[in-house]
Image (tube, rainbow, N blue to C red):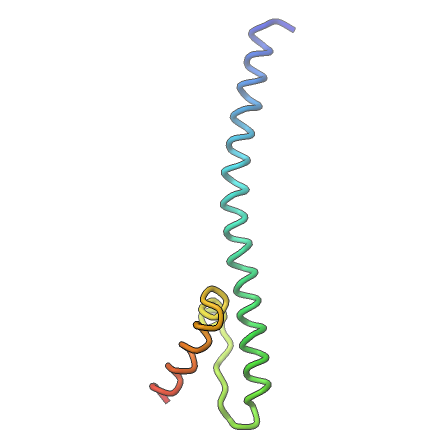
Length: 87
């Protein structure tokens, strides 16, 4: 192999590694958001199961699951407060 081919291969590998690192970093953020949304859905499901006897439930959809998933317990409290205000 000539020197110019080796330099071209090294440059290609370096650019590929940088692009892969950027892509996987963004992919990790999307994966974490999806995982938090699923956790929020599970939290809302448990909440609705526990309080179903009282008739107080919160609708489970992508927006409410995302709010609870991203904000956690404060997000669930926010949803409960909003339910009381706009009931």
